[in-house]
Length: 471
Image (cartoon, rainbow, N blue to C red; front, side):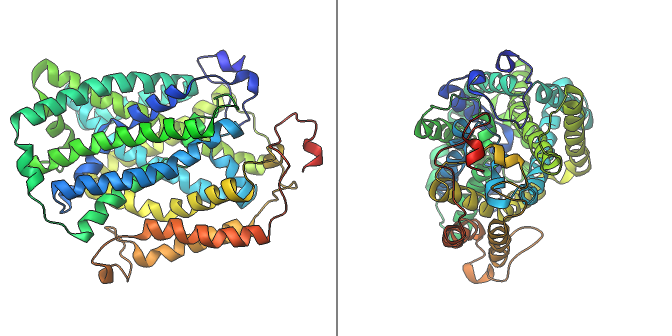
């Protein structure tokens, strides 16, 4: 069966019950391991690099982590119930063709995340193998291609290995950090500022919310009777604990390093811990952590690209060769961007993280409101592939609220390349992500209820004899 193969044979199609497998703990280890990595460390460091103190940066990061983690985990809980990748279910809210709009933006997000992550992985490989950063980036890209083609089972194996390796590496780094530095002095230096505090909240919230468009991709193989609440906890706790651990280390590292941190992120983090053989092991840990999350991003990109194409071609069967070509295209673009932008990484990454929220918080709000409060988990899965079926080609309510949700955030955005007109009146604080979650949710609910065309009495799976009666 497809479910027994180490190399995945499924793509965006529904996972039949006979192929379902796995345990909830694998969801925890996947997201825990995926967040014990260098990009999360750098994200936490940004809170200090951009003006925050240590104490309030840690508090702000934790608040954003929890808030964003709840949103992210609510998406993850959909996987076992639907047996589908996350973004194909957006056809319920946007229509079979309309869902291409958020899908294209999600693909851009994955490419951006992979590009920035590849820069850091290239630095680590360069230090570990005594080659240039450029060579390190190319080596890393080759590894990602192989693992992404293998698919779901290999990704979960990576997650378990990354969790074990990450725990050991981070425990060592924290012990070294605490033993040779006076952390108490850093924590006692408190200068609260709303702008830097909310920046920390936004950084961690954006980190979590950005997982939303693909988190269900990695829970969709779980048996359909898996508890949604337990799935929510496994996914959410893994991601929150892993990312907060990384960001705490980043905050301390940036506070101790000062100006030495920017441009030498990987070398400085490893330098906190050791030199010689131990440094080599830590560089390997950095690379392995990036392998896990970059494989997730490339796999999610592949799913989105296949979903976009299938929206115009109907059901899409993807061969191993086509899968390889898709992955090569996606990873190739990310690698090219990494090579071009490797010397201006930190500032570009901060702007990227904050600006992408404007495009994903409205999608998240619409998807969650519809799934939990409008259709109430009752999807007609065969109709997701039928432009003339229940969900139609274009759902103008979903599309309209989405566009409105993006526009309404613009006055509140503060990034390196765009600052909204209301930011100055709010003490230079960026609250666009809150606006992008709350307002679209409040607008979508009454409009969707008014225009609701009815849902099946239960979730309709492929092969269900009753499906024809519910389309």
